[in-house]
Amino acid sequence: MSTAEIHYLPQARVPHSRGPLIPPMPPRAPDSMGTLRRVLMMGQNAIATWSQRAYEDEIIRGRFLGSSSYILNTPETIKHVLVDNWENYARTVGAIRVLRPVLGEGLLIAEGKAWKHQRRTLAPAFTPRAVSGLIPHMVAVTDETVERMRQQCGQPIDLREIMQRMTLDIAGRTMFSFEMGRHGTTLRDFVYEYGEQLAAPHLLDIVLPLSWPTPRDFARRRFRKRWTDFIGTLMAERRAAGKVEDAPPRDLFDLMGAARDPETGAAFTDAQLADEVATMILAGHETTATALFWALYLIALDPANQDKLAQEARAATDLSNPDQLPFTRAVMDETLRLYPPAFLIARAASGPDRIASFAVKRGDVVLISPWLLHRHEKLWDAPNAFKPERFMPGAPPPERFAYLPFGAGARVCIGAHFALVEAVLALARLVGAFRIEVVDRAPVIPVGVVTTQPDRSPLFRITPR
Image (cartoon, rainbow, N blue to C red; front, side, top):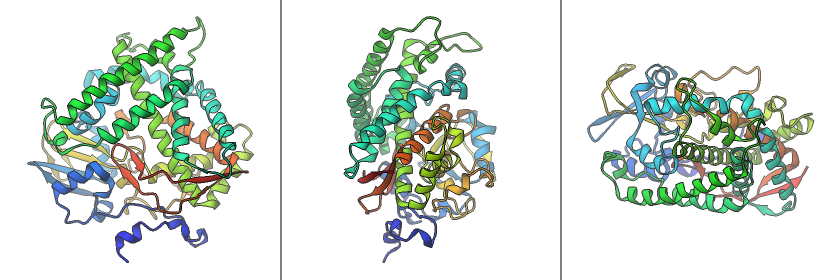
């Protein structure tokens, strides 16, 4: 049996008593893979392009079209790029081409003064206090999802689709205070269309400057026009509902509409607000749905930890309080370690720099991969094993800058707290209500294109607890 075949074995068939769960993973690429082939494969599954060296070495230097590239796997060098000298490292041309059609000039894309203005203006909407006011929306949608799922007990179900629908409705209610029923299908169609046809970077997307449009750029521009029209429809519908005078903000749209730059007093223009709405809906809905799918998949393969999570959920006196769910939070943290939705942070140097012993030149590319970092053999014990106890209170915390599910530094994900609260509360309610089993025992392999997606949607079976 080959090494690749061993990597693809469904590890859940091994009795849990023999050790921690080792979930399926892609095979490691050969060291001899050429640069061009590696770039072409990036559009199919980036995390399958890394060899064993990437999980062992601290820094890997490569060459592409006359420039150097660096994969960083040490907390010190990562801190240097993301914190100490972060303004010297901007998004790569390929990343901008892929993200701009759906996110516009929103927070994830903006640079320089525009980014600082957006970050300062949006920050009050994502404080723990502001997020706590949105928890009733999250809980209501999750409870409605649980009730619908009760009608499907004993039948094979697609939990990935259910999570996408649930998180989409949470995104709609927390953003606009209305259900996404009428718009959900259209939004999902947009997401699937872009993900399947336009999101994967082509070689020309990487090698050509932004001022030279690639063939896919023309299709992306046509998509962008339809997409922005759709976001405008959602905003118009929310505005038609009005705002209750002298009442506290009821959703993110109220918070973002009232937001002002603390230095200049400037509000968002309609175009800027539309880009921020698109960013929050897409980034929040898709990544949280993916994280919840992987968490449910892992605990379906690991009945002992599933039972432990269910016991905690059923013992909690307030399932709307994440502080009462430390093990559920640990399961989510470990899920985000093994399957970070944002598997790759790519930055291009704007000017010369020095990273460790390497002289970095303008245009060189620096790669920080949470996928690699979270499974690196020098940073983690049993890096490929599912062990939620790593993140329980009292356990030694991971080394700083060795665990980056939401990035780090000035550009750390502004919605990290929101996403964790949503995921923890939803997971506790789902597992507290149902025993979850995987019907299809073939392994589910992670695929990295824009986010860390499963290669297919397996069927599950749920039974009431």
